[in-house]
Length: 328
Image 1 (tube, rainbow, N blue to C red):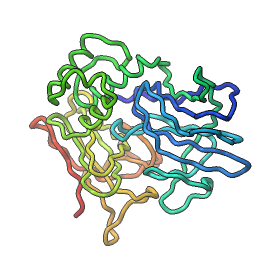
Image 2: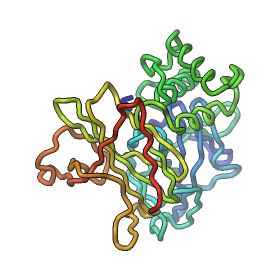
Image 3: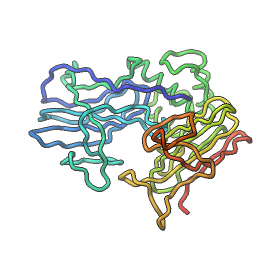
Image 4: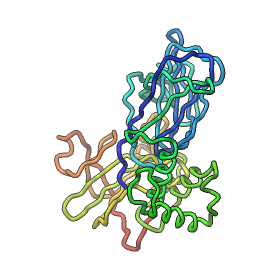
């Protein structure tokens, strides 16, 4: 699966500040959102609010006093290498798990900076304020929900054709096969827990392809590389939360697959045990860098702003391979 770049878009108009504030998700990703509130030179942040495609969530109840409202959104780790770019100008503090930070411009231990975008929500028919998360595809609610289902079916290993929010025989066949394989009835399609069910299934070990499973108490960041016989392409990073699994997007039938992963702490620093990094790799030297990357050139890494990293060979000759990352 190739993850297209998604763009966070916001629709603005002047609105009063005495109603609930909602964030509505018209993206094909399950997202986690955080808000920032600027009030008389003090800035507070809070998050994360999980929002499924085609749903809304109240993030502030009642009267809201603020000079500015800011927003950050991230996709769940199941989607791979950061498909939602952040381009806001305000760098504010967030934490990995649920958080409320009163002074969000000076980060403390366990907090990191994230880019927030200023928003001016619209006023809905119910009198509440609403900000929309949207992709370039400009899905409506129905299309966003279907595209979200299609995306998770692809991650779980099913062929739906294009991820376009348009229903068709391939999507219906893939969804039926998914439900049957998990012993689920068709009623789950209309269930409010549909996306949780599908995310859980996509994060389970698969009999096909490569699966990473994080058995550590730490967040793990992983990279994958594929050799198609002409060139080797390395790509990362994929976030794998503790006690979850993830299938990296490996398309086609590569001749070889390579893997590297490392555990990081709440400040995004590599965890060390007895002065040795906690990582899982091998002898194959390939190019990586600290931020999101994809490259099919594996020479002169340093000259191009990359670092040489040791990847391990993954044997998928039997149809599937699960790599489990565990504490030594």
